[in-house]
Length: 258
Image (cartoon, rainbow, N blue to C red; front, side):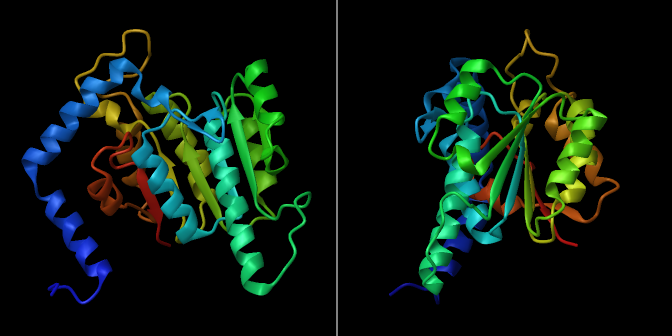
């Protein structure tokens, strides 16, 4: 006989127990630091496109999207497009589930929910791969710096008709760039939704990034902590990190509470 009233209570206890296990946390951090030089995240794809994420973070995003049910997901950083395809597929499933519930017939050419991707350099082979994908009808892309004034204005204009917005920041990982992205896009996040800031783990590992402008003291996590000093409407959802353990986004799952 289980001592918990329901499965959710058992899961909550599991997560709380793991969060207090210092040895487990150290082991996890060491593993993440050891695997990064091997480009571990490059080994995974979603619906045929490289997604470049830990599987654990993919699972977390699925849970968040099901919980929030956004009608717009905005992503900075496109790379091969796997994350855009992932987001589009999740929004497609949301619409399918809603249609089944009410007995509605879906029109695949008129999606209600959309994904907007921004990248300073959308390489031609990646653009072709994304545009030729079955999920392409749900995806729009902008090329340019995510913090350039004209791009920010275009994104804000694009977002106006949507009611529930989720943001994913995964482009340039320097402190100043991510902080600028947070200032530009976090205000678009609706209450109960999230701004997910990836690669905050850069602050926590001993791995060097000699060919990159970011590193300890200059990365997404330092930007998150700086932003939160003056934006109490967001809080770090520690339960996600505590549940995943293996994540590139410790302290990076920001929930809008106001």
